[in-house]
Length: 108
Image (tube, rainbow, N blue to C red):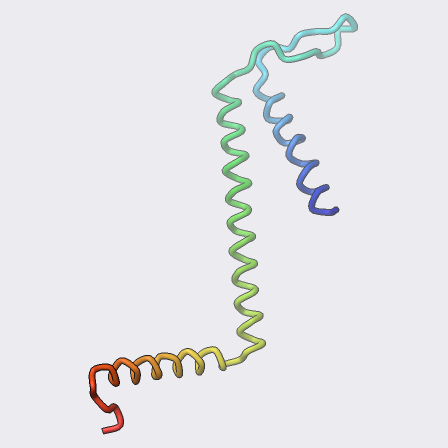
């Protein structure tokens, strides 16, 4: 539920803000209040939306990277140094198997 709220509310507000800021000519209503936008500055609109999308994507990459780093640290703490020992043992076994295929006994 929280993800839906955080994902659906800020987007339209941010994009609407950029669209409103790129307006060059606003129409007026009968009560002299601001109406709808009649002319947009296309370059300002494209730059604003592109910058927003780039900024959001950069934020996503940073947050995902931080999450991956935190997860690697957490799993390393849980397993201690056993990951290094397991990897070393696997490499030694692989080397032993390769030497056996060549007909060489590594124990000699």
